[in-house]
Length: 158
Image 1 (cartoon, rainbow, N blue to C red):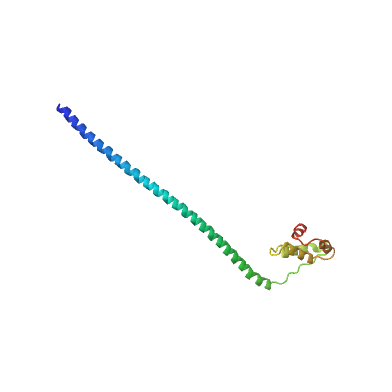
Image 2 (cartoon, one colour):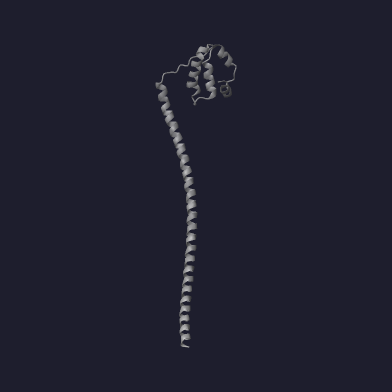
């Protein structure tokens, strides 16, 4: 019987140790799960904060870019305004030859008009049409004089 008592005693010790191990494992897993949930909540909160900050930064960035574009446009217009008068004062007046009926002067006349007047983006099409009429004489002037002074005629006839 003594052998059975020894085995029972060993079994008791093993059961006690096993129960203690299982209880510690359960406690560890519960603590781990609790910490994991806390970390997930913190990560979700941080992610929401990050998204909010990102949207705010994008909005500020767009506002800054818009303001920069306006400032840049104003600066460019300012530079153009200050630079153009100085350039036009120092340049000699352009002479664009008139075109009448002589086909030998056509190329010189149309090139002068195209480079000096038509390429000038600050002039409206009506202004360009008026300039064109002023550089024509003879039969060419008579042909164009019947047209109405509108932007459509200039674009379609030049």
